[in-house]
Image (cartoon, rainbow, N blue to C red; front, top):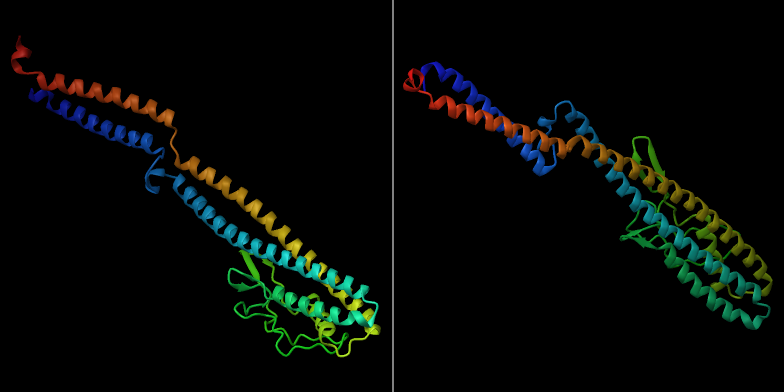
Length: 296
């Protein structure tokens, strides 16, 4: 190599190395489908991508919480439906009792329904009692020593929970109350009516009209709670649908920002290849020159 061509050769070699580095970067993009392996290679898009990824992560978290709450709300709805069925059966039996000879059978049925109703109040979801307020590890209904002696006086002595209403937080300014406690009127009236019929001694026919009225009132309250619960379920579903749509769109934008245009990358890689081959050819020519060739 002539001294006169040394500087030129160095420049060509430097250009070739830079082109080779660019080619390697583009080939990595082609292989991974991403513009860069880290935020540093994204330039001004890095902050936008980071914010989108945080938003998607937050959405996935609150969607998970909302779905778990929705499952609890669905179970509450099913439980209230079963309680309403008990009340329907008991009302039919009470209204069909027309003689003293039927009283014993009526009381036996009431005792069985009382046990079933208490079990419904003690329903659990994922190991937590649904109707105990904040005392989710404590069975809210305890019939030990419980005996209703009046059809008109409210008696929540069976209830071992508290008044706390469960809430799920879905955002800084968005929370949903979804809990029902086992001392609500529908539960209390149901257990009171069933306990009275099961344990009254004597239970007389003239009391059955009052029992039927209490059962009707209890069922009205249970149905009202079902309506409240249904509104909560609808609100949760709307939130989940909207947040899922947002998360999908934010995820799509994140992918769009992070992804490379493979077709454009292929064109760029081909261009770099041509430049690299030209540089190598120039270097070969420059390095083969010598004084003898120059003087010939």
